[in-house]
Length: 177
Picture 1: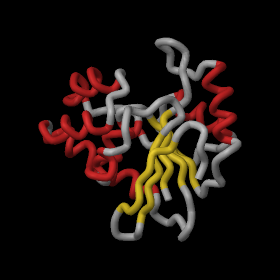
Picture 2 (picture 1 turned 60 degrees about the horizontal axis):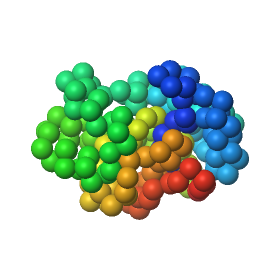
Picture 3 (picture 1 turned 120 degrees about the horizontal axis):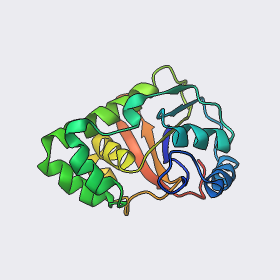
């Protein structure tokens, strides 16, 4: 099982979590886990979220931190606005590079599950927009119905069957596994 959450609230225009972001991450962290592995983007707010939740970061994946440069104008326009999953889906249908990026994200997520024992869970923490797009890369139709863009500390939970992604659900900031 992979649980992928957006980082906590950051300081306005900053790269670090705000005091409120830390407080809420602690609350969420007390209601989730345990996790076999914790993976984050290398951006401070993602790492700080994991630590505030009470988890050590096992490793960072740089590709969880940003869109490719050739997608940046599209991603920058969409990502900051908490765009719904179905709006991302429409964008993916019209932008082959974004579709490729979505599939690459889904592959990275699946690869993070390598060597995780049956029944093991991974926590991944990254950023709004990236999670929505990656979920669509994993299960395009399943992710379309997940609603609005993700708030701080929200995310998706996906089950890997060993050959494909299975059940996918949205995780609210007040839910654990």
